[in-house]
Amino acid sequence: MTMQPLMNTYNRMSVAFDYGQGAWIYDTDGHKYLDALCGIAVTGLGHAHPAITKAISEQAGKLIHCSNLYSIPLQQELAAKLASVSGMDNVFFGNSGAEANEAAIKIARRYGHNRGVDKPTIIVMENSFHGRTLATLSATGNRAIQAGFEPLVSGFVRAPFNNLDAIRQIASNNNDVVAILVEPIQGEGGIHVPSNEYLEQLRAICDENDWLLMLDEVQTGNGRTGKYFAYQHTSIMPDVVTTAKGLGNGFPIGACLARGAAAEVFGPGNHGTTYGGSPLACATALAVVNTIVEDKLCEHAASLGQYILDGFHIQLADAPYVKEIRGKGLMIGIELTDAGTELAVLAKVKGILLNITGGGRVVRLLPPLIMSQNEADLMIHTVSKLIRIYAGDEADA
Ligand SMILES: *Cc1c(COP(=O)(O)O)cnc(C)c1O
Image (cartoon, rainbow, N blue to C red):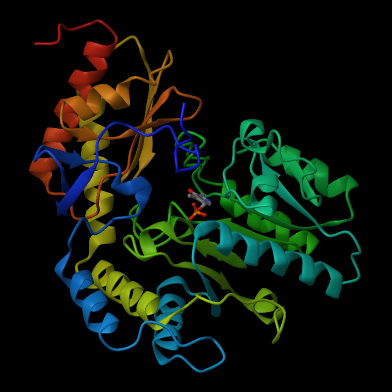
């Protein structure tokens, strides 16, 4: 067998896409698919959004890159915009979610050292996902992602998600803890929404102990859950917020936002990246943030998301193989009683893109923020039917 030129890191489906338009994407054979996944929460504004195409093409013809050795007005403009939508103080730009989390982890460690903690430790959750770099995979609560890459990065201690007692217990017997890193809603783990008071109580525990509350909003950010950031459903402010995915609508950009003491941890030389915050990345993300705000897409995501959840509750009300339907905004999970790995392939055949996560049992839908109610109806109908066919409850006509 001849060696394939691509490293074998993905189980890819046998389809290749040619172009997209709004909530739709077209393969190289001309078939069209309703994109209910958005490249995993990335293309929130859909495909070929005119404001994004314009921002990219105009900036590409002007200046793509110049280096962080120089001042970059578009970077300052984007930082100010993100600070205003989030209430945070300042921003570091990288190129991905993992990089944004690396920045957060470095902030926490340096914050700890500044306070005399020699082995600063970060509390992370079971079932979490924070990325694939060595530090972020060590923070991730999924053994399959870590296996074979030991030695892991030290300085993490793990607690069950949505469990405050476990955090209080760690607080009472670990003096090295300096921060909590947590997803406001677990995405890769299977769309797990914690109790309403979870973030608020984590904030209180962090305040009592002088820990940083660091939220990984790589997936939940940029309007996905019906607020610009998911913590904005609560009354609390985090110390650090990371985001990426929907921020560039497909153009690679990640951001680590900080507030208060956390915002003053880094000085020149403490962190950096060649590409981060390039004029092109920032022009694109500015167009994304402005579009989300001006077109009131957070509000739309909130109401359409509720409409979709209600729709699935009705359509799948009597389905015994559906364990739970949950989510917030346009982050929706349908947990099955059994593995549903093949469902993504079946869905593709029926003209809809979705994926299966949470150990193979959760159908994950991350439709675009620009989805219409008609498209949502089609998605609810098609996915419900698919699940019934898959479970053998309905014939495949
Ligand atoms: C996708 C994701 C990441 C990693 O982002 P990359 O851009 O793939 O590095 C980190 N955290 C969460 C919550 C994610 O969903």
